[in-house]
Length: 231
Image (cartoon, rainbow, N blue to C red; front, side, top):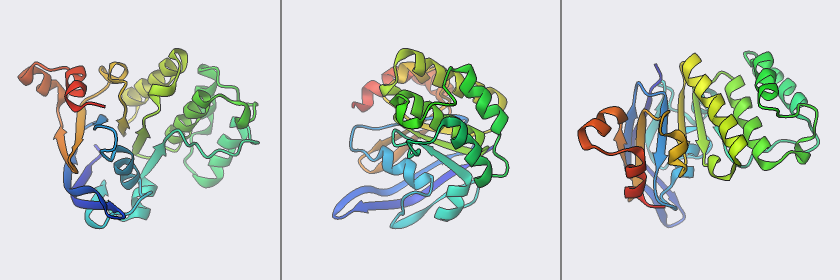
């Protein structure tokens, strides 16, 4: 079981306040959807969780680890900005991960690439954006970190690559005890995977820790929740 605890965090960019006294707690979830209108701070929240951005006050912990460095060790961050060397192939990038992380699952990562027809020996600069997104996810999964934070990548994938990413995530949730938090407007793609929701509204968070219970009690689907948030 993994635990994400947020206590009264505040975050500003210049004079703009992104979060004010934002708190949330998720202690048994496997797949959490992050909702919020554009500009509500979804990307900022994920970066804070992954130790990539600071906070002014409050605390955020992953499995009891609260410093930025400790959160970075606990998590992987997947976004449209992969940062891969355009001259390196996926094969080399995966091999490099074994030098950074002793526990990196190299054979499993290569198998995932083969299973979704992601070319291992083509330079990253020649891959499509969707293929680079998939490689980012495979790198994150291969690293075995307990938390994976995914920032709005599904919307820009074609049908085949979207299906490939969802297949990878489904296998991950079945086989391993990790927590995935994903920001996405493509609700129809994650409806069957989601077991929790975080709403970002007016600088604060509303949490649904048991989405099945919410559906039963309120008669609302994830589509209805998205409609209430807006884009």
